[in-house]
Image (tube, rainbow, N blue to C red; front, side, top):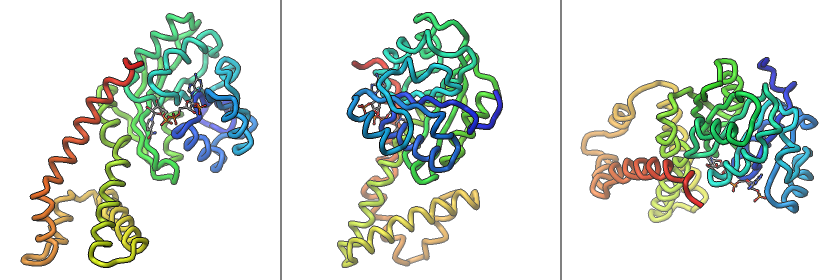
Length: 280
Ligand SMILES: NC(=O)c1ccc[n+]([C@@H]2O[C@H](COP(=O)([O-])OP(=O)(O)OC[C@H]3O[C@@H](n4cnc5c(N)ncnc54)[C@H](OP(=O)(O)O)[C@@H]3O)[C@@H](O)[C@H]2O)c1
């Protein structure tokens, strides 16, 4: 399969929050051509609204959507994966690449469901775990390949997620941890950001200014880590003048157990990521 995505026929099954973010960005960037994209959702009225908004075919018929699709982006909820795979198994083209963004769903599970439902070929499956900052091109995605996914399939998946941010290729055993850190992480980061802004409001800043200061400070700090590769602790030390203001603030953070709370949040979200598939 060649790497040129604009020649490919794409089916996005489950164009909800995440699928919608990815699809909107692909269309905006011209990564895929609207005439070669079909999306699906559960509710017909949402299909109509989405088709009008995006200018692509949107249907509730997953079987129809995957016919002759080169790439199938599976973005339904983990609990809906089995149902959708059973529906499409007999209609997937032998050469198709199936990219699943569902949390908690191993590539082996996708392969087994397809085989059990009579899929005629050994479909290449790539599991991906993106996050919502993909909406502004600042996403973080980890990908891993299933049994029949070769390096060319991983390269195609990588280019789909590089278009919306950064991508790392990882061993599948790390995917729940990725879910707990970078996929859930934006929610944790928004709470930190909102709390910093509340602090600014408490000391008299207008709310819009406080939010701008908090957001740009978090963005800038993250950019320094990404661009220099320096350890965050060293960068923190550079802000912390002896007997200055920052060390007093850090003392409050330590007393409030911010570090341990964040570590536990990632651990809890990771273990929850292992459970979703088996819920009704
Ligand atoms: N949100 C995130 O931050 C995030 C991050 C990483 C990974 N993920 C993964 O992305 C997947 C989607 O999550 P989400 O947050 O985008 O959920 P969501 O907004 O609820 O989207 C799910 C979409 O699937 C559609 N759908 C439901 N049943 C369907 C069916 N049988 N056939 C076709 N479409 C169907 C729904 O249609 P209607 O709109 O008609 O209800 C909805 O558009 C999940 O597996 C999640 O683990 C999400």
